[in-house]
Length: 102
Length: 309
Image (cartoon, rainbow over all chains, first blue to last red; front, side, top):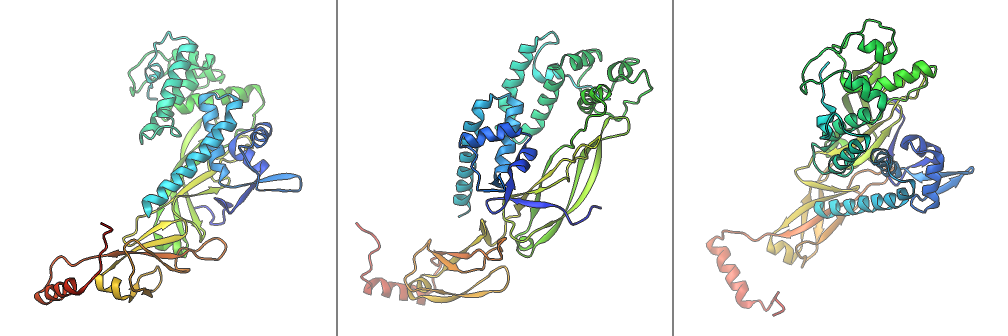
């Protein structure tokens, strides 16, 4: 049995991940991530010690984007647009779920 | 080893060109990709499609696959003599395929070959995604869940094997329904000093008999009699700890949200969400003689008209 002391993080709007960590978790290269930031699709929440930090909920959409890129062999220029749509879908699904629960 | 007909999975002939294979893959990927498809069986189907494509798009792997010959899908078979030695550069070393999956073989095949040529390149462990269901009460007090899953690991011969894993995970206070958690390094084990994969855990709540959950707020239906709604009342409302008395104001309507502060789920910042009681005015379906008389009397003396027409 493994230890209970695990390095865990909740993926939500409250927690942050660094630029490098987001790159490691997603499989995107630093250049690809940088392009996503420059396109305005990926928005850092803060900048510390010359590094960007992002809301950890991005881990989910960035990983999905990375899978889609790999599985559909997507063009790098389409990735920013796709991330915007993924985040829009996520927001709409959240709102729909909220409405259904209410 | 059990045979999988990769050509059949992609719906192409054994003589298909790379372009035809790519087209077939893309068409099926659009239909079954788990990030696109809502088909619950889509993920498993896409895994098969991806596995077939990964093998057939690679010239070397396709040749190795074709060398296996043609068999029925699911049929147990033995590769031709010296197939392993020829394909994975093991110099004819005796090799057992009994408990090896074809997908695992081809996944490690390219990595294995590269290892021999590129001096044991580090291979990262796979990421895994699991879902756990917990009760609302457990989320409220914090709980530990036991996860049982199978990971792929490389054995000493460089072959991928399925290894059962058990992991106990403490869910921190503040988790809510639909939340995702990242457990760093708890996925598949890396090989050749490669990093371990990560584990992504989806947390879903088991539906509660009373409460509905939105973020850290709880919602409960509060049925009221017509006279409680008209006159106001103090009503006992359950929470996840003890009951509380809720003051219902006179003249409350159906569907109103009455807030009971800080009786929702704990948040990560030590605060709590709220509990909302949603009012619902319920009319008795059967009336005693006396009740009927009193309602008739009320109907005669009341000037209230809820209709704008």
